[in-house]
Length: 191
Length: 342
Image (cartoon, rainbow over all chains, first blue to last red; front, top):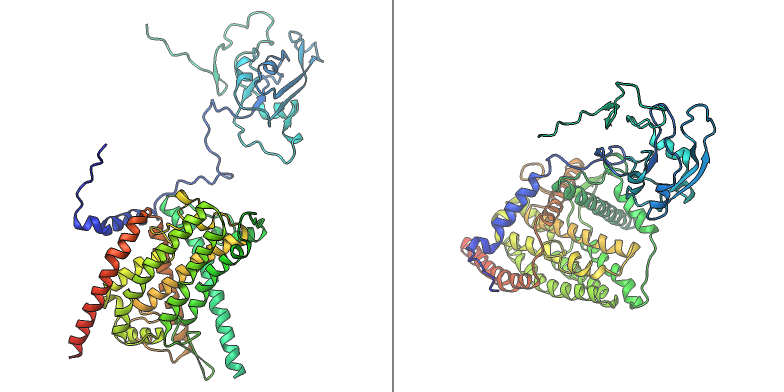
């Protein structure tokens, strides 16, 4: 291919006007607004579906939602999850639930934040939340146990309380997706 | 006699101390300026507004592991950084920082060595700096530093000539090679940049090439040569190359101020004559440093604006344009001076 070389004028060939123009552009940027985020103090705004560290959540009444079915443990590609299943101690409280994890460990050094555990969970008990800066001084510190995972997860405000009602929920109970503790209206699909 | 010697030693210590301080803070200024030009904030963590960053950098360099690759020529490899840095410091000896400092009946000159061949001394010493770079490139015994060294020697040879020739008209007009006399001439008459703009322009461009600064930073060329001549260096040896580059920038800035922008003088009384009072002398040193800082900023400003020249463009510019231009300039100035003298 023949490269077309444009004919330059005398001043263009001296480079001087172009250099001066460039310098004018850079000097104009000195007082302009800066885009740096002062990171550790100023956190980035994350979108709602951000995939950070996996956590265990509780339902709005404070119950651990996980029933230790171990699906997440089996699906986890790097085998970061280890569950020790156990029976629920207080059977009287909500006897629909038979099992809960005795211990639930996620090795954050192995986790690849793929979100399969969240996707596979039939109880919606495990969520990838917003924590993205997982640091520690020792490997042991980064093997999160059940207590730590529940702390990170907190309460998930949604309407799927599978174990609250034995039969059908009372009329008026919101069913379906929930955002910020309120049911989300489904948009009417255009017919 | 002893007192005089002591005075000289104090002066040398002060000049080197102030200069190294300026070098450290030029690095700081460079990092700030480039950040601002790119709409970033720049270093702001160490101390208030990050002003202690150079100290942190220095500490880091000192405590880093000094890697000595097994394939290098050890003696020359270790000498090279020193050879690069020292000329910059020595060249400052003949640059007048101020006129006089009259203290308690003694008059202290604002220059360490009031040499009659000041400018020749500077060119002789500062061109030694290239040996450091060539040595580093050769002793590293690896291809990128070697290419950097070759480019550096070619570039320095081309631009040393322009640099030398471009200042000839200045001395023809000022009538002395002594830098103190040149400044005094400018203080009494006018800044030489007004009489010799072409000289100044060529000197400025050559100074960029001489200090290996963008757009003529071919010996370093991070993108093509992985840092060029200092690829194999680490720790304090690398820091000395770094210091050497900024010290050379300081020297060239000081030289431009001295030759073309009136050195320590300001164009009004009492700053347009050698000081007879202490405070005037002190202000004149401040004026000199302020002018130098302006030029240091110019170096930085240009670096973060324009891309690097190609090797052949650099050579063509030096040999085919600047050298003929300087010679024509010398002739023109000679003719004009002869006519004026008549």
